[in-house]
Length: 138
Image 1 (cartoon, rainbow, N blue to C red):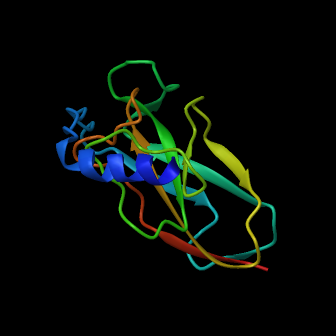
Image 2 (spheres, rainbow, N blue to C red):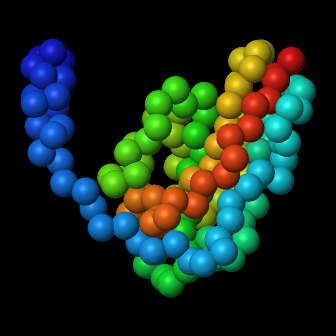
């Protein structure tokens, strides 16, 4: 059954239509307050999100110049910005309007990146994305 579902998704994927993206507020910027690029940290890791030029609102709330955070953890491939962001171990949603989280990451090197989503979890146009940072968990 899983094989049939996967095959069906592969066949239908080219027919998925792009969703109209919400215009990004001018000068909007998302960034990490903590940790910083290159930090070595002990687990669990507290991650605090920073945002300039717009507000935070829970998913589903349509309000001008607002969105909510998504945290990309050790993501190996780019997200499709023309569709709602998936929710999995590598793409974490903060649809309640949260501005920080605690991660239980195994020891080693990890990459983190923030991307803002609109009320529908779709990235803004243009994308409001932080620099990717690399941290080491000891």
